[in-house]
Image 1 (cartoon, rainbow, N blue to C red):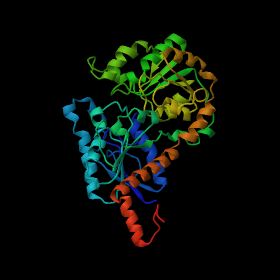
Image 2 (spheres, rainbow, N blue to C red; image 1 turned 90 degrees about the horizontal axis):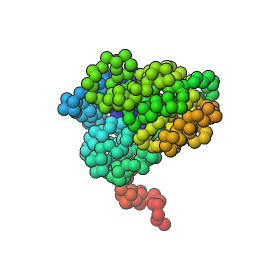
Image 3 (cartoon, rainbow, N blue to C red; image 1 turned 90 degrees about the vertical axis):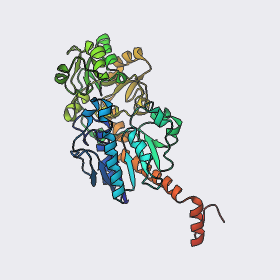
Image 4 (cartoon, rainbow, N blue to C red; image 1 turned 60 degrees about the vertical axis):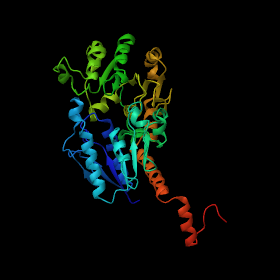
Length: 401
């Protein structure tokens, strides 16, 4: 295959990220198998990204994520500056066959506004599609700009205009799934774990309350707003207006006693793997329609069953009664926590090795790249013109005798 893809990661975090960074971790998982399959990847990210690639586009030397805590009028140009650099790269080089974009909202809007004869685009939707209704309800990328979701459930909730641009969904993957079915078993501890950014939709307050009510040990792992460590949050301004910080202080912290419920901040690498692999279950007490579920597939790959509310992509990722238990409401969730020990971690790892490896994700994206490019070619070279060219060359024409 001769294919060069500009992979637009955005200006927020390095690829791979030093800790929390969902989209950047997905890109870090996707690029290596794509390159093994023969795809040349030009990475558009920040300068200190360490992911090997065949070329780079950078406007900022380091990640700009922390700047998002400043007022909008001070930071609204950051993503646009990065996209401007991407557009310059597309203008200056003629070897890019497709842009695979991961930048929320502004990436789609900017790339869709390019001239009709510009490079084709696949824009991956990683987030809640109820956001940006003014954009998603009116988007028109023609046959040049297409989107994909990270689950079927996510796309089913998309506005009609956005869904009309969809070429399907690709479930997320994790390197932990490679040979997960051959990994030695890990001895389980007594705790459950909730992974992810601490925010109302993830339901950490519900999980912490259930831990006290039902009587199980719970570890919360993830950042609170811009704070990745308990020590940093402890000295934060009491008047902090970040909504996740307010949620933590008002709804979660009252249940965090350091014994029954602990918060360990952001964990990554071997520390995260150990925390999840030794957990009785990974708890997802969701209050929102989870679009992708990276932490879900990581938990399965580490041999840890999932207990969750059946929202968003969870029914697509978890087989109830085999790799996890799915609840319809809070009361049922509490009951399922008590029943999770009957599930097999070996089943979880086997399912992860079958469905959620980086190679599986990369091959699925190759299929979408081919489809996006083919749709583009059909516009540039309509079927009637191709038939005329075939007739002129004396080749058989489909649908004729």
